[in-house]
Length: 261
Image 1 (tube, rainbow, N blue to C red):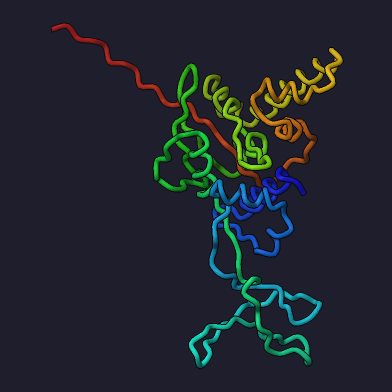
Image 2: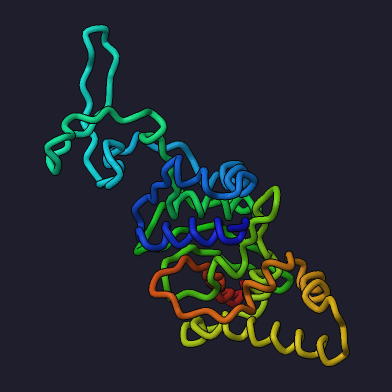
């Protein structure tokens, strides 16, 4: 697993949970690259969550998912345990603290992180119909509200977000291109395909010109990382759940005709 895999795993879990927070056990994150986990925490995509209420029971090798119960000792210390009802030789099993620790991420957290990367200000309206406002993004020709949503929107987050060795980065150019060249609702579903087609065509041109480091050249032209280019051009099966960004063109209000006095 690399940084891109860790980011994809996090976004996939958040998308699968719809608007509910996704939880990540401390033990699970220990198997991810340490630099990637540190970058996700620094970006605000992973925050400390409440203790887990269901854990894999450590009482035997079967690792059954069991509800956590708590009780206070005579000294006032709270202990966590599970009660096994599936084996005769196992009863009450104490749960170590590290099994209870978990981290969490939600669409709201993702929207906050995106706003910080874009330097935009969120409206503070929260979620509306599975969509989270990220703020107003200005392009060269206009401005648009950037909206985070689940399924069916312009750009999959996996195509514009990249988790490098030390930090999370966002392909701002891809979003400003959408702002400057808005499409109607009928064209929204094709926006990502258009970008991929454009990247693939340029890559083929570089290959035809016998440019060996074509991915690096393409990444420099686009202002993104090489891993982001590879991820965008990888053949993927359509996903039933994914997080997407939708730059919605800012509505214009016609000017009122001046009246002569």
